[in-house]
Image (cartoon, rainbow, N blue to C red; front, side, top):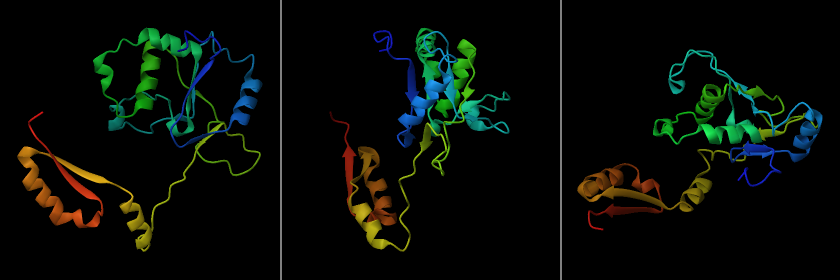
Amino acid sequence: MLSSNEDIDWVGILDENTELNLRVLGEYVKMKQGELSPKTTSLFMGHELTDEESTIIHHFSSSELRYPDTQAGIFLSRKLVLDLQEKYTGDPSLDFHIDPAYELTDFIKAQLGIELTNVKELCLREPKKAGDKCITYPRHPYSCIKRGDGGEQLKMLESVYTIVSTCQQYHNTRVEIVKKTWADLIPNLHFIRLTDKV
């Protein structure tokens, strides 16, 4: 896509709940004009996170790798994306990702020597004041249904079509367990059995 369109300078990776303020993005790009050269410089930008101690999800790495919070968004310059395209071989050993943002950061640093640039305007919370300059922030539109609100719970459950899928060998025993435990809590519960026949 980039190789056929010279007009694209940046690639943004946003979560489905990330709010993007195009006005603030435009102001940031204008302010950084001359400093940032996305066509000629590999740039990897995000809101920086670091581990305070070794964690299992980051393979107990002792490095202090700075990786982006995906809810605040990740931005890659055109040059970085094209450089990554050349480096990535489709290696199946890269198929396992517990924390994709960390793994991407580790890959970019190992393969290209590029580290994350922290951008404070990629925010972790919705701006509280009108003057706060957030290019992105996570939006939290969902709320939990309160325990005492049975009508809302039932309405939500009735809007969901739930399927329990089993193989032929275990169908009778597993369906029986579901029926004895939680099946009566789900209004639209259906059972299907996969057979060996195609």
